[in-house]
Image 1 (cartoon, one colour):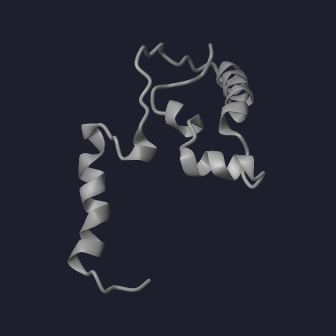
Image 2: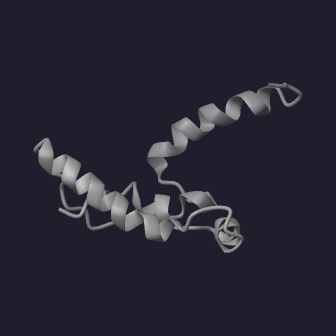
Length: 90
C-alpha cells in the first residue's frame, strides 16, 4: 500500500534548523524514520482493512510557511489572538 497521503510528506522533510539538530545528534533524522513509520502504518491499515487512495501530489513546504488555501481560515483564527492582544501573556 505504501502509506503516504499528501499531507504526511512534509512531516519527514527537514528544514535547515532540523538538519543542524540532526548533525549535533540532538534530533533524529526524519528521512530515516519515514520508511519504518510508513511500514507500520501500512501494516495497521491493512489489519483494519482500510485502503488509502493513491494521491499523485504530495504537499510540502508547510515548514516554510507554504500552505494550501484550506488552512487559511485556521491560520487566520490562530493569528487573531496575538494580533488583537499583542501584550497578552500566557
